[in-house]
Length: 108
Image (cartoon, rainbow, N blue to C red; front, top):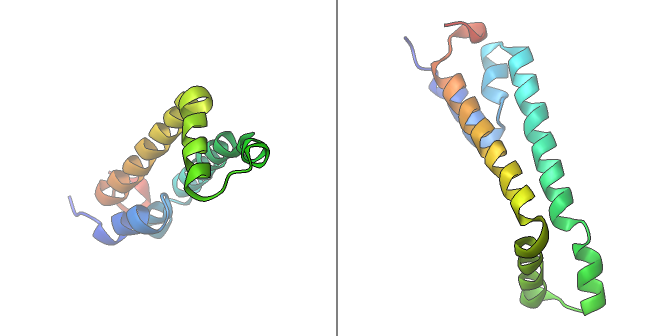
């Protein structure tokens, strides 16, 4: 079994799924890229939904605003965001490991 270090580095440091595209597994790489981006969009939406209005009405900026956002995550949307980020992290690690050990075109 030959390890594909370049593909793993592409998936680890550039974009999850890019290592699969580099190896020629276009469908798998495309799916990983799509799902990772979907996870990030949903997580960002949940984090910032309502937080902007909260900060404007509270007239906060800087560190006080950051603390208010963190408090809002703890009270409301925190668990959902944590689950999504955990799934994102698991998919990222899967992409790295798959790019490292799977053979050309995703075989092996």
